[in-house]
Structure formats: structure tokens, C-alpha cells
Length: 321
Image 1: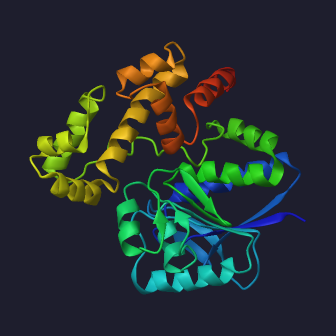
Image 2: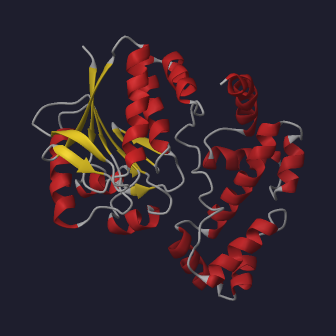
């Protein structure tokens, strides 16, 4: 019997949050003789208009069971009475589903339902501080592309929903089908959940001139000592004031942000393969290659050697797409 995958949308949802995972499961079904049955739902059924103005046809969400139930996101986290009604319905449906998942700000609805209390969860890096503040019972990680904690799956924005779906497909049907789906969709197969969200610290605007100046300084001096004391001096704040202001603006500690910046700068060199790990570590401010490996494990979830080997195996695949 096909696994039933349900998608929950609501007015103002992000179209890619739906279409990306939907296409991944549809392709997997086509490649595996119909292993999935897909349904797009809403509370009342009928046409539901996305944030971009395109409407999709949905079925009314009725009592029943899904194998996998995925809540899509919206440009702004849902709030108020509509969010409360959605959250209550999500909790009811989740009790009869093997897996419950969210894409981007859909995590706010899972959090509002109480399903994520005490669990690890992620969302788009931009909304992670807000999620952490609104739902302190969650262990929010704004770095990871997707997370899974005892059947509760959450993912970052937009394309990360595809990564999460590929992980689910691999869990259900194996690596070969998941890899083939990724190739057919012309996407990277597949970014582990531990991968950091691309450009989460490269493009972030903290909204504070002091913190913005400090981040710019850190990016330009990765090879130097970037202790919290030195960064506090750049911001013209005490160490205590700086630590609080930085964490409030960015959502992580200064030390973790510096580590992230170093890993983001080092990763292209690691995957390129033309420099030794010792050289890359020195260029990007790691004490040694061993410390760089530890940082990669924390931030990316894989060692530099694993990333380099994987990049080599993927190069021929990318050329034939």
C-alpha cells in the first residue's frame, strides 16, 4: 500500500515550501512504482492562495491518518487565532501519523501545537531567534538545514524542504532512489541535516551598527585571533555587554559565530582539494588541522576529509546533469 503523504497549506503560504517537497515525493513515487500517494490539504479545502498570488486546489483536512504529514511555511510566522486553529489540527493529525514535518516557518505551527516541546528543531536562520524567544521549551538550532527528533522533522527555508524530503525518501526507499530523485531534480544529493544553512552569517544584517562592524571585522581577519575580548573592543562595549548584544542580534555566541565564519570560508577550499588541510586551517584562523576538523564536525556534521571525498565523487555526477 502506498505511503500517504499529506501537505498542509493555508492562505499566504510559500509556494516553494510546498512544490519542492511535493515534487521530490512525486518523483520518488514515479521511480518506485507508486510508493507514495500525495494529498495537498487545507482546513476547509478548495482554492488556497499562496504569498505569490498563485492558488492551489486542496482537499479538506478530514479525520484520518497520514504516513507523513508536512506543514509548509509562510513569509511571516503565523500568529493569532488562525494559527491556534491550525496548531490544534496539526496536533490531532500528528497523533495518527508516523512522521510530522515542517518547512521554514511551518515550525512555528508545530511549536504552537506543543509537539516540539523538549525537542530539537530548526527553521530559517532569519526566524530562529524569534522561534527561540516565543517557544523557550524548544531546543532551537538555526544552523542546521533540517533536524529529526523522534519522528518530528523540521527544516530551514525553501530548498531545505527538498533536502529533508530526500532524507525521508532515503529512510523509506534507500539511498539509490534518493540519489536518483536528487539527480532528476538537479539538486545536491543530499545535504545532511547537520549542514549549516548557506550564507546564514555571510548575508545576515544584525540591525546594530556595532555588531555589523564586528562581523565585518571578523570576516576580514579570520586568520587572526578573534577572542571575545578583541571583538568587544571593536564594538566598543564591555565583554559582558557585547556577549549579550551579539547573541540577541545574531542568535548565537560570538565564539560560535566566528567558528561558523571560519568553516564557511574554509569549506570551498576543502572541497576544491588543491590545498592541504594544514594550509587551509592556517589561512582561516584554526589553531591546527585537528581543531578545524572538530569545528567542521560541530558546524557541518562531517569532517573535512569526508567533504573532500564526497566532492570528488559528486563532480562527475554534476557534469552529466
